Image (cartoon, rainbow, N blue to C red):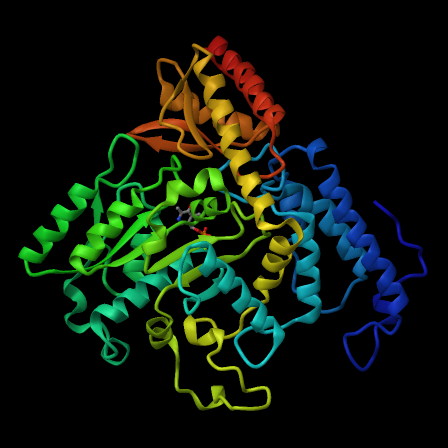
Length: 490
Ligand SMILES: *Cc1c(COP(=O)(O)O)cnc(C)c1O
């Protein structure tokens, strides 16, 4: 860490007229110092523990009254370096395998700085930042075989993207009056997803006023993919009972095991019954960038909407969720407001309608498009596709290592980049839960837990472009040692 010269005090030189510095040179020096620290951090990530528990003193150190007087920028930066940075969850680290977290890149970090400096508000108006978002949407439409009239919108994450898609589907099912009258007879609407779907689908049903009971959870086959025969049977049964099926949410890359529903089969069912076909492709949809993997998503081209995250497999820093909707008019009619202060014009800054705020509930919106555009431009989509394929190859490597060790057993087929396995033992559930916590606290590797058919498994999701075979090996060595210690103590 660089130490600033005593003379470069920031606050001391803060201008009286604004929050800008009176002395821009001292800001420049401090800024370079902060940038250097983050570059050093990324460069030497591997020398750090993946995660470490927050010491009580560190946790307590933040608790103070609202600071009425300011501090030196350099001092606040030191607090960040000492008390905050070391105790983050560690998903940038190559040994991080928990949940499905992306690793981010230095390029994304720098783009975020540019975006923050510009401080653009992407709710709307005639500006190049909005054009950039539209360009990313056109790229995604092309990638997924959607018409170039499709609409795309950056949101926080796939939870929000799924909800937006569900609201568009609800608007299609109930017509424009749903926006004034509420759901009315819509309490008969039912949607379908698989028992392996992410919980945010049920939450979206709740938030949309349809209720979680109106979401049918279709069983999955032995590969954890939606049973499309059972799906069709449930639709027919609901119709016969006077309910109104309106939407199917398939998953491309389930959160537990990385299963991909048979999207072509789901699409065919949706077409036969006139239902909205949505794909939750939170992390899996971007497999489309890899020629080796794209075939796994066959049928996604027929979707009415797709939700996915650039911040997972796309390696863009948090957050960068995205929703793509085939019918942009229906999408716009679900959210656009006739508000006077959002009046549009043919010229001036109020031109360029429709605006992003017409396609979702957010009016003030950050420039998520910039870090995504930078990532796609700098690395190119081929390279990102290779990174995605490499994470799947690592998962296969881990599965082989598991199969070669009699003490370990695989708990689910490896479809993409997720491996669920466990250590054998008398009370395997508590042993493996303890081992996952042990591993996380060791700082060597950080997997998470999954419940597979009622049994706990160690779940390793390889998402980070920095992860390699040596990190998988380190996880296995640590696991073996920790398991031996636990079994010896029994
Ligand atoms: C991560 C994930 C989500 C939630 O996405 P967020 O970006 O965390 O909101 C939804 N579905 C699946 C399959 C996921 O993997």
